[in-house]
Structure formats: C-alpha cells, structure tokens
Amino acid sequence: MAKRKQAKLTAKINDVSKLFHDKLNEKCAEIGISPATRRILFYLSGKSSVNQLYIVRQTRLKAPTISVSLSRLEKKGIISRKTSDTDMRNMEVSLTQKGEEIDKKIRTFSNGIDKCMMKGITKEEIDICLKVLEKLENNINESK
Image (cartoon, rainbow, N blue to C red; front, top):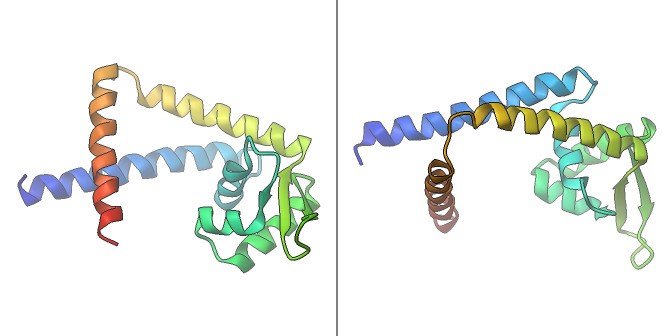
C-alpha cells in the first residue's frame, strides 16, 4: 500500500474516533459529565465493583488524577468506595443508583451516535472494517 494511502487511512481512523468522542463529550456536557468522568463510568458500567487500580490501568490516567476524580464523583453521589474485605489497601469502587442512571443516559447518547454513523453501512462492510482494525491493533501490540 502506498505511503500516502496508509497515512490517509491512519488520519481517517483518528478523525472518525475524534468526531465520535467530540459528539459524545458534547452530549455528556449537557448533563454535567466531563470526558474524564465518562471514561471512569465506562469502566464501572455493568460491574458490581472494581479495584481503583483497575480504573487507573484501563483509563491510562495517573493514580492521583483518578483519586481526585473519584472523590468528586463520590461527593456527587455517582460512585461509592469501600475498603476491600480481603485487603485493607485495596479500594473497591462501584456505581450508585444515580451513577447507573447517568451511565444509562451516556449509553443512550453513544448508541444514538453509533446508529447515525452506521447509516448505509452493510454487515459485510462492518465485518471487513473490523477485520482490518483488528489487524492494525495486533500489529501495534506486537511492536511493543
């Protein structure tokens, strides 16, 4: 593949990802949710509780940033934190009912953007795109 087409593909992947996240961030801002908060809620969604360190690893944010963010979310009643029963150094984080309601709104926003993006795209095109993206991801992971 010519370098120009490779660069165009990489740029297009980045553009689509940025457009999606910008649109989602715009919708989340309407309900007072920041991009960092949205990322944290994403990793809490559907789980009874997760280790605070798990959130640090998944979001790739610094531990102090996560700690401050979680404190804010706890004060707003969006999450709850408790010390693990098995390890006092381990902090377990979970969504409250309010947090679950916010997460549901965010998922509704995300699904709406997905639906808009997928207009006119066939199942076969999606399958091909997924296969290519998986190869790209594998290539990046192998180069570490």
